[in-house]
Image (cartoon, rainbow, N blue to C red; front, side, top):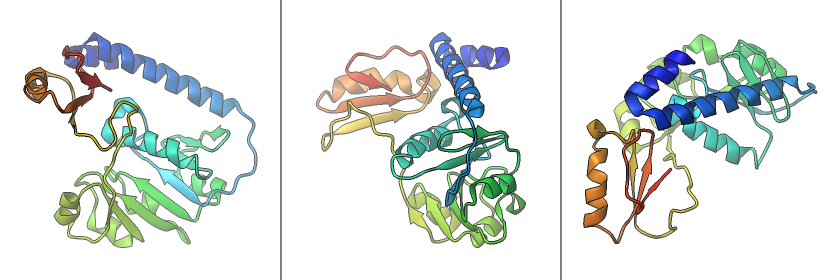
Length: 228
């Protein structure tokens, strides 16, 4: 915890370090609460797997997954496996292997969120269909070849791989974004080397547009730029 706080303070400032510490504490408390709840028999058709973990401090993929899982839970029971942890609708188990998570849930479809560091042995199991959500250039040709369905976040990435698949662009809804209006978003750490110092001037030059900023960092922004 201390090395993480020190690194974030150095790179992003005190506000980001405080926010990330709060996130980590809330994460730990949620996991302990779920693990303490009594187990029951489950039958869940789809097992979501993120071998990179799931946490807002982990970056874009993990944050997108958290929002997607929140919406998916409104439609059906969902199971999520991350290293050492299987979260089920009303309780959790300490689980260290995908095969054990499949056995507990009875899932016949495995949805892999992100491919960094993933091998075929991690995700290929008899009688289980594989769906792969690709987020970067780390997917191997062997992994994509074995997938029943591939999901890309952009046409660019699909063209880079040259393997057919569905394009579903990621998005995180925000309550203060005008539907149907003109919006511009800056996504990334709000720091000078990321170009964030240009945002106030741009917002001044184009006041008719709603401006939004998504990311950590302590750079001050005018009130007209909505910070998420």
